Image (cartoon, rainbow, N blue to C red; front, side):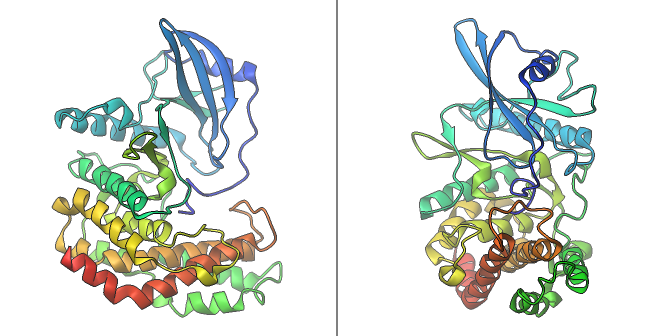
Length: 380
């Protein structure tokens, strides 16, 4: 979603080769660094693809500098990731899974055995093993893709269902606090510092007319009706690596936002990002609609993997979660448009307003299809 995997603050400036070599020198790598290539597509963390010579050939690795403008405590992010990836690998090995090193991200430790290195400027760096023979998609186009991605997130949640304490750190506190998002929108409308509110009057009215549903998921958690679990918090198709040959979803990536939450956040975001078949920034939202074949495939994949551990209350609120998380993201895009596009990177005038409109259009479509969506989940 438009969270840290999608949030598009200006990427930090690329680091020079000499500085990268100095950073890499602190990691436990056996072999000579042959090449460094900047990775395109990421807008949060600075990323470089490394090629190293080893006996018998070469190996590729992913070097990343954690953006501390988004993650104010990178060490806590890395503590979460180290614990989560270790647990996932342990559970996969215990199940006898094949190719475990392709099914979970693997951190390369520093010479001191730490999961990250901080340079003299205070920047934190990490290295993952690069998972060869895989690719990620930016948009779901077929039911098969939706089912594969949803199964991956369901399996991810299932493997972490028995995650031991202590509780993970909240790397972005209040990330899915929808009332907080509405409060930010209210401030943006009142300030209207760029005189954009008139242009977005219909969207503002639409959002506030549905403000009463904002606290629904938080209320469920606060009452204890649904349990707190370890969840991804940015569950979209671009954060799943698919096998180049089989199309199987192998590995869930972008773990910076893995933290305590509810499975409803992840399912809601899957509905938001995988069921319309349209780009998030589609400039003409008239054709944006929830496609039932994509939704049904998403449900099949997710419940096949996660169904055995879900509570009745969690299953009952899957559809409302899709509606709420989609609305929440629309509110976030709308707020940034009114604030002057300070959080999400834009490539054209009104880009964030276009993004907002696709989300709100999808909310409308979910409302129209809500009964059919519930019926399908109840039957499955």
